[in-house]
Image 1 (cartoon, rainbow, N blue to C red):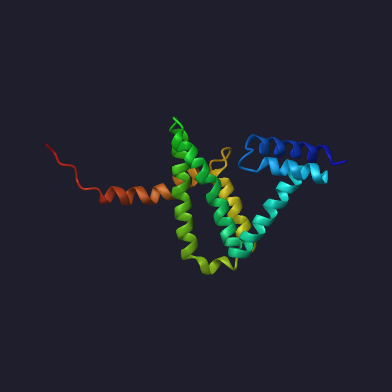
Image 2 (cartoon, one colour):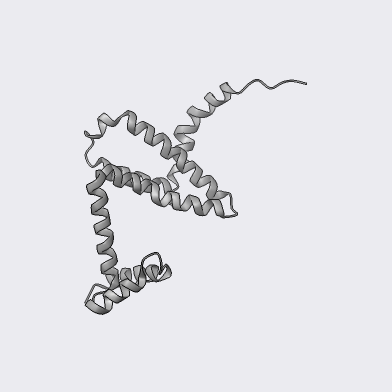
Length: 164
């Protein structure tokens, strides 16, 4: 018998899978569960592990972390565009500005990456901190680092206002 916390996690993942039956091929997972006697969640995690391994084999950790920093925020950005609130639009637009600046900085300093131990794990945690709703790190990075340097430059490039 599995630990109660593991059982609880299995139930949550099962509820998630059943909420989106066509996306996760729920019927096929249920058939596998009936044939083998193993929970369908195990097969789901196995499929995720195989997909992750293939992606890693194709592009390595850089591709994995870039997908981590792109897939969920892109999904949430689509949801924000369709919502009527502007708060989530601002949150995700801010995230993409910070993501863009980080990508440019990462490419410019790519020679340093190999010297930083666990760089890609740190990068994943940084992306998670940027877009997690509890922390909203993208707003902090934007307001503390990017905005003070970019806004004065933008103001200098504005044409002078005509006086009437």
